[in-house]
Length: 322
Image 1 (cartoon, helix red, strand yellow):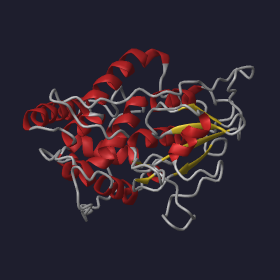
Image 2 (cartoon, one colour):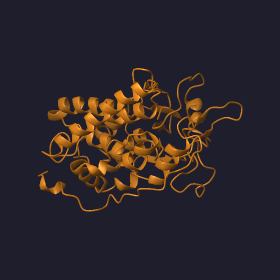
Image 3 (cartoon, helix red, strand yellow):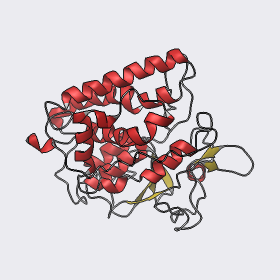
Image 4 (spheres, one colour):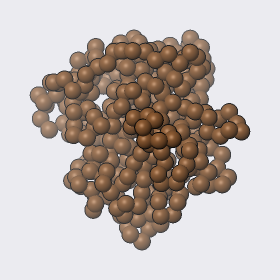
């Protein structure tokens, strides 16, 4: 989750990720898909990390691939500089849902990058897919981790038949991923970190045009690419679940609430209620991070109380076949 500021054109540039190796079902590869070999470092606050955790849960890989979360508030990652970022708690009880790094004993995600590369100079982001055997980062690009989890571990997955990137839908999935990312996933950040009114206005227009497009699509079918769950649904869900609780306030994305969209709100409930996915949502982590880790837009770090939405309520999406 980058913290760069939007420029005058309402862009929110994200630094390219640096570790781009792939786990493969080919057991002769450098990173073979073996049970117990890999660990996924996440933050429950970060949507990019949580979409990887969601796929891990959907595929039934949580017994084959371990995972753990950092604590939600950014802290100093080294005593001798001012960098603020993801850190591990000192104990299992310090922050419910977060735990110390039992794999490497690192105090911060930054230390993981230092272990993997002595000359690394990029951002210290999550998710991190870690190889416990070679003691290195395999990949820190969420979109690629999604694809690995979807296909390369099928021989040890509990739900190998689930394919979130089926060959017959890949063209529309790629197209949908692109406009969902630009308009919504990254769009909320363009609004939140806009540095002038014009940039904010442009970003808001783009964001709500994309949300309106989703609302229209979801009035005709259960999910974004048809009546079966696919990758763009998970990518969209992680933003929607944070929208009313955080983005409307901290990022000023307040033109319309998600729960004011009939299709989008019921759709969010639908996905939240898929087995395993509710466990990927920890709203206390989300709100602590967004309200407490961006002093440039919330200098006092006061956390909003509401609205505490119940996403387990009945929805109407079953009217579509699947």
